[in-house]
Length: 268
Picture 1 (cartoon, helix red, strand yellow):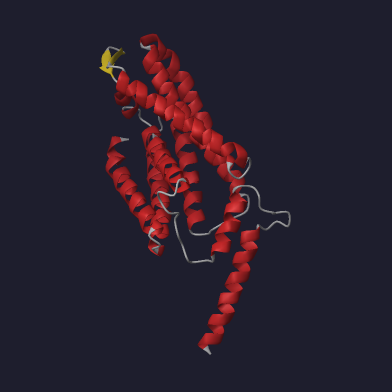
Picture 2 (cartoon, one colour):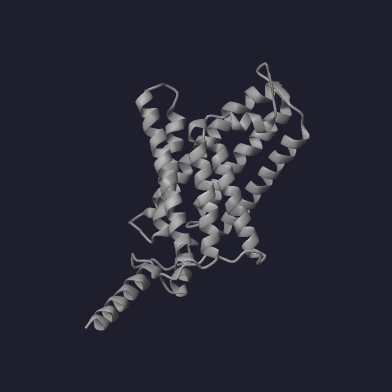
């Protein structure tokens, strides 16, 4: 993963810049966020193609992880640009479920090896993987069971805090003949776990700071604020989609028709 670190750092910088630009009510901020999500999908796709080219055995978990991340990043990018397609929530949920199962298997495989060397390191890495699982669960549950999304995110953040406490408190421990801290161990993992935790922590920090009014919410004036309220209702599972069309989709269709009609009149 080290060969992609430079790209990850650049995308994190762009992500923060886009978020602050959006909070400052600049429309290009939202565009940057959508392009960053798309760029993550492209990087994950490149990694997947490289793994497929290697044709090595034992890479199934890596490929499943990358496929789920490509799907999640692509859908998040499409959400920014108001692009929807049938069953998008189900596909998003399945991708999240695959990522959860992938990291659960990694946790099960790593735990006995680490516990035999150090119980503290096993606990730290266990909390680290559990945080990813819970964060992904929180993100995946929003369209289906929104009431459980926030508690899952809070539990994930608690796991990250536990990992950080153990990482700073315990000195390097002997693992497979080499002294390592919990931080060194996770940074040497050949997966995207550190990137995922960093992204989730940024999102958690933003959500927490907006709730206490330290940071403003992100802004876009492409559509009226009523549209975004309807989108939030759909994502939280509170929108009425019994007719096969979400309320915000009907609103957008009617709004586009209104704009086109008036632009046409102005053009005359």
